[in-house]
Image 1 (cartoon, rainbow, N blue to C red):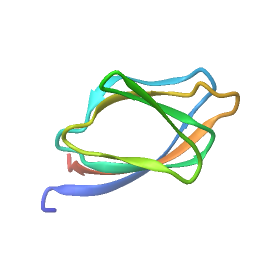
Image 2 (image 1 turned 45 degrees about the vertical axis):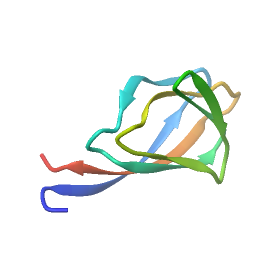
Image 3 (image 1 turned 90 degrees about the vertical axis):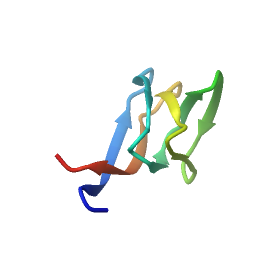
Image 4 (image 1 turned 60 degrees about the vertical axis):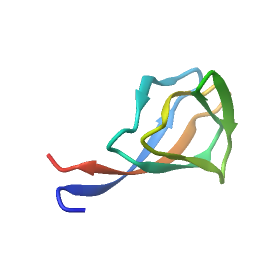
Length: 85
């Protein structure tokens, strides 16, 4: 872990909102956990909905973007390992 740090963020995506553009996680592995609402994860041409209590891993092969197609704010906890600045 030398030169890296564990980072945790709470991210809110409002209804109709997008977390993008398309991005990857090379050098920044992590995991996401949904607290509220539904987040649609778009990767490899497939859209997958994740609701409260579930989430997904993000590794060097992850290339995606996210959106909230629902009627309420979607809230996630994102934990990843990043290089220290």
